[in-house]
Amino acid sequence: LAASIATALSSSAMAADMTIGFSQIGSESGWRAAETSVTKQQAEKRGITLKFADAQQKQENQIKAIRGFIAQGVDAILVAPVVATGWDDVLTEAKEAKIPVILLDRGVDASQDLYLTSVASDQVKEGKVAGDWLVGAVKDKDCKVVELQGTVGSTPAINRKKGFEEAIAGHNNISIVRSQTGDFTRSKGKEVMEGFLKAENGGKGICAVYAHNDDMAVGAIQAIKDAGLKPGTDILVVSIDGVPDIFAAMVAGEANATVELTPNMAGPALDALAAYKKDGTVPPKFIITESKLYTPADNPQGEYDARKGLGY
Ligand code: GZL
Image (tube, rainbow, N blue to C red; front, side, top):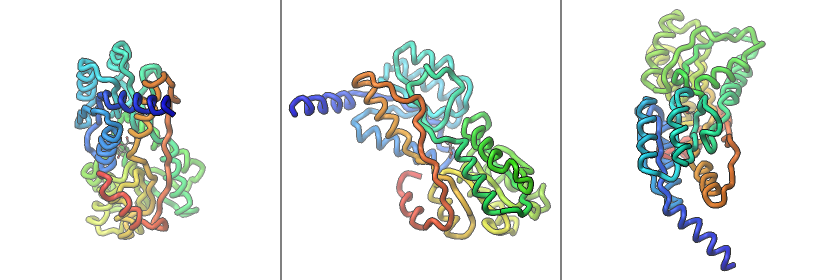
């Protein structure tokens, strides 16, 4: 018993000494804001000192922040990589400084030995779940879809497009007629949807909007209403994240489906880091979080209430 108490004390003491740098993308969406607050809570719970850097969605700011963390000699670095490419040099510098890096919620096109592990959803699956829902919703009715893509070059945008297209392949009644990035933000999602509506006969030709995140979907819902159409009935709305406001839209009959993405990537990341620091336990390279479909049949008011206050 004494030995196990000593071990527990030593590991918590070690965590208490840990300083970790977190290079966060920005605050482009409600989900991103929730991830930030959950990450701060998860660090605090473990007695870890967290140095936070917001990059305003610019990769050069992330690279600068990571170099700063390396210079400060932090014990580890968390990074949510805004885009997939351009990380080899800075991640090599972290490796050479013997500072483990953990990726959160997005991936990188870099050698896997440049990061300890990646905690993220299966983003192809998210797109597939969204597409499968639409296939089931429209059955054999003709359906022209407009797509609001996430940030160009980010793994969620690439993978969610891929998964959705896999789902609708073979269903010739469903086609994506317009697709453009809304950069994961409400304002850009609204603006791009306004353009789609104008280009498609005031929206009469559009059956559904597929948005790579709920924030762009909420922006699109506003644009659809401004055009005098009913989101959720005239134009179906399907997206990803599971933020409170998409559940509020479901309660109002204005959204039809979302695929939940947990904002708690940091919990599994910090657990993997603690085990690695304690006795060299190497975590799996990819820790995959759940992707669950929610529709208005799943008590959206209750889901809204359950998420309110989690930092969205
Ligand atoms: C996905 C994550 C995405 C969210 C968006 O893992 O990177 O970034 O879906 C956020 O809300 O902008």
